[in-house]
Image (cartoon, rainbow, N blue to C red; front, top):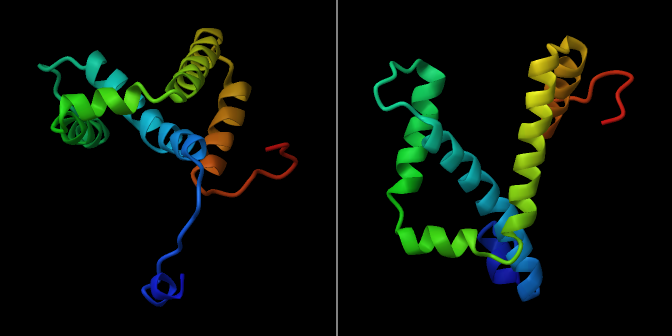
Length: 125
């Protein structure tokens, strides 16, 4: 591995199943999220900056080969990631319908932590 280390690369050894799990997480999760966004879009809507950025991500994803996209989604571990997305969407629906500000703030703090932010004080994150 020293050849790769000299190049600043790290090599990981994975079983086929571990590889499939990692690919489901790193590809299925963002692909499904982007596809749900694209499926919900109104082509005639006037987007703001955030919407435009998401649309550009969707355009990039959908420029990929359809068979490649299907193979990624048909990964044996993709359903686990899809279920996570569905569960989070149902939770968000619950929070929004209940207009539960406390739960929303707790959720936003968890999201911030998930993307690299600090865990809030007195948090069980």
